[in-house]
Length: 252
Ligand SMILES: [Zn+2]
Image (cartoon, rainbow, N blue to C red):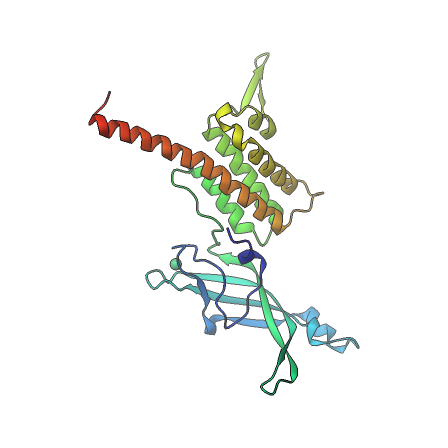
């Protein structure tokens, strides 16, 4: 996963780094006549300030982006905010000059981006939570991290880790931490990854912790490892079973 895609702003007239959420092959390109930006009130109100300069300029934008893959051409709407930055360069005669460049940072994409591909065979409830996380990545990083934590709960259920215990005939739900602890030994190699994603998600559900976009991206990188370990192992087991059946040309 290329983290810079989510961290860097974009400019008009240049290709964006965003990948198409439908085909995952094309890049998203701004449809020029759909794109507009306007200065915010806070920025306008600053004009009379003695220290005002173009670097205090602030705007909002909205626009449509289109997939560059001719076989797809999916359209995605986006909105967010913008600002200007001074850029220094040398003119044709080699004299130093400067100009202001407008940068934009997205807050929303609809349909949402897909920061990493999901493996085949992923349970529907896990997929749903990961997609919720994707849809909140820019607007609400703490909630985004928390949805990955919920995806882990579903993933543990899929791995047949029990959800509750009984004591004196009463049912008690097991904490996520406890459930990770009782993962079968064959998953020992990924227990630490499970725990790390849990901590990031926990922080997202408690308002006294500040969860940033970087934390969400960390949890995505860990989740990619987890899913790869779990689903590629299952795929390998299925491939080896298929090989045996094919060699026998039938059941045992
Ligand atoms: Zn596409």
